[in-house]
Image (cartoon, rainbow, N blue to C red; front, side, top):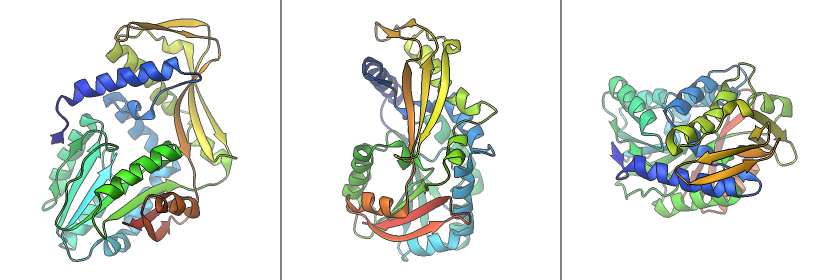
Length: 320
């Protein structure tokens, strides 16, 4: 597995730096990418299986029913490298790769994820189920990853509506970095959640089983484990909201009491007032026009939009 040297130490140092910055800010906030440690990975896999969490089902439907359409758009007789950013366990992409093998396509696959644990799971599963596809996992932050030239066509997959977790400046930084790495006719394939009835969107981030709550509270537990913090999860609530004007779902951790929290690794103590929040995640919703405009500003030209049968979700393809 390709990785950044001393990745674990780098991640903990970055985690500590971002925690210090976010908890010293007003209002408080933490980057959602730190949800994904080994425990967070497992919890997120449970979230994707919930009835109310339609996003994964919709994307899986598109990647299954539109397999040949996508492969036809991607393949131009040259070797094809699929680079997936933040793939999780890769279960949505695996059937697509199996179909590519069945069509005898010259294909390789490079999953890029901040979590080495989930990449190890993916690598073991893919190597068991794929015969000819070269698998080259890369552990690290795909915002700053370097993608070397390739003697064929590359397709970057950015799925899971992960682009919705970014602000416009963050999304543009990522899209521009990928465009700078791209060669002529390389492709970008983005999966994103479409605007819809607000109650359905909110339910996806507030499941009655409490899995999403546990996923958010694990961020507190992770600070306790890795940064020697003394957060009491019983003194925080998970609070999800949806703002239809901004088309943005937000998740917060809210302090239920006045309290002090010490983070040993930082040598700092933070004050929380009762009902004060920590923003942990945004999840923006788009339409196809908005996504095309965002990508177009970063040097990507729209090729085609695909939607699931219910019209809840889209996968859009862009060419460098």
